[in-house]
Length: 410
Image 1: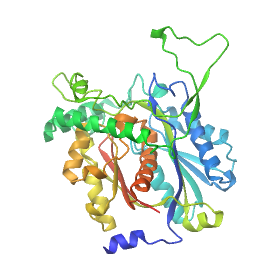
Image 2 (image 1 turned 90 degrees about the vertical axis):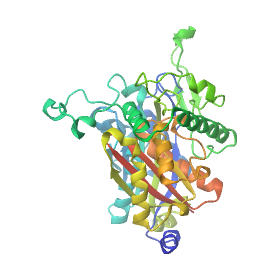
Image 3 (image 1 turned 90 degrees about the horizontal axis):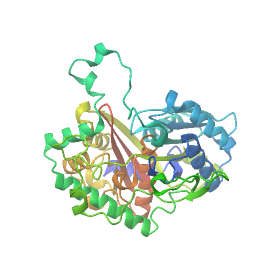
Image 4 (image 1 turned 45 degrees about the vertical axis):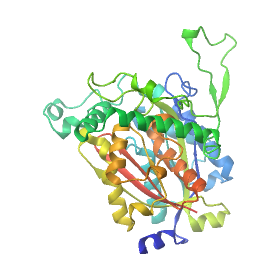
């Protein structure tokens, strides 16, 4: 109880969240944002952050962006977005790549900078256009020293396709196809209900995007020029998903496996942004507080079983903060694959009623660099709707890492 009391106590030095927004997450190549470059997506969510909060861009010291697949680490693209969004030359920028947890780590690192006093006001977020940057390499380097990766072991396993790690988890820990499909179904149904009830209205911004044409249907860009359309919803959510339909899908990564397109996260495009500062600074600027960042940890696991990482990271976080699993009101667990999600939920003993109330990445999508910020925004939403206070965001990450972060809703 002492840990909980301390965490809920407000202090001027708290690192608070003033805004947490994201674009819609849409399907790569075919979805509504497929023709938008990552810098355009990031710029959109940064502009929305300024517009909705009224923050003076001159007061933002630094912007830290999670980016996984982009050329040169996404630094030039992210800096372009920041300048285009209207931030002055005094606002600095950097990028971070901790794979799927990149924007969550951006929030953690920005929180540390604010606590140290080196940054007063910062934005941490992420962006990924998997339409632009995922194919054909699929996130695996095409050049590594052969001497390092020819032998069996961790050095070689870090290059393992993520779908194979999902199969490894399912096989090693006995996660059945039926459980995976049931979990995937729940993700779609929860997401569909959330959109229907307005759950995402405060979190998701609209983006004006170049229209995507389906050439198979005879659609082509008109000679008159680019058509622009408003994209305002995640387009991977399927309310009509059924267990029977999921059961018909073939395994993708192994002929005898259980990981399918239906029980895996969707390859997506999108961006997220979280505005952070001290409570004292928020009061000074007259900005309302959504919640606060408390603490985060990372944890390592075997690369071939990377999906189990939340089951290690969450206990590490609870131990560091003096909490127990029952103290947590909402969990946002990134659904990289149903196999690893099911394993982690059962291992941790998470109450399903507290898990991903608005659905997860299997339905919403998983634009790698943007997902952590999305999970934080959705956590703030979930806590607000449920009246809860304590929330945890957790996810696995390629190369055998896990992230877990603790947040409090005001």
